[in-house]
Length: 143
Image 1 (cartoon, rainbow, N blue to C red):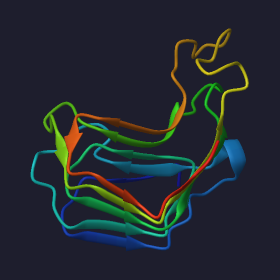
Image 2: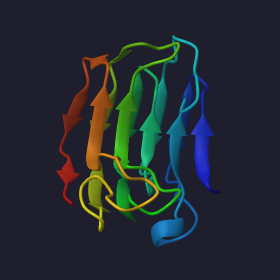
Image 3: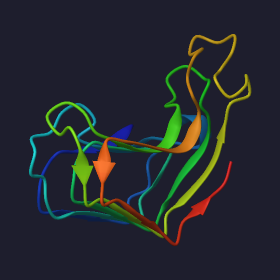
Image 4: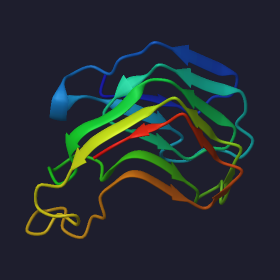
């Protein structure tokens, strides 16, 4: 599995580990392309992967870990954990990340991937955009 994509309400997923290791490891996509507003009751527990990209409201990510990659390598995301508004859901609300380890996002070519095909990337462990009532608790974040 390259990524676990979902855009469905009333979904509880527990204990998935993305395939691959290191740079080839997959991730978690919740409405990464486009979701209709109103997604509800989505809980992902103990997922382990390279990244999480969430573009939906009312999502709970509990436990698990994301990270362990070079953001400047082709095909990799620039951040380990993203909560992004935009598209049909302009402002995300009521998302929770609890007890999630977010770690080791490197940028061996500098913090904005100078000299690579991804030059201009702004590398972060966590990046949020257009949201309200977001909760991060009991996090372990390092880079």
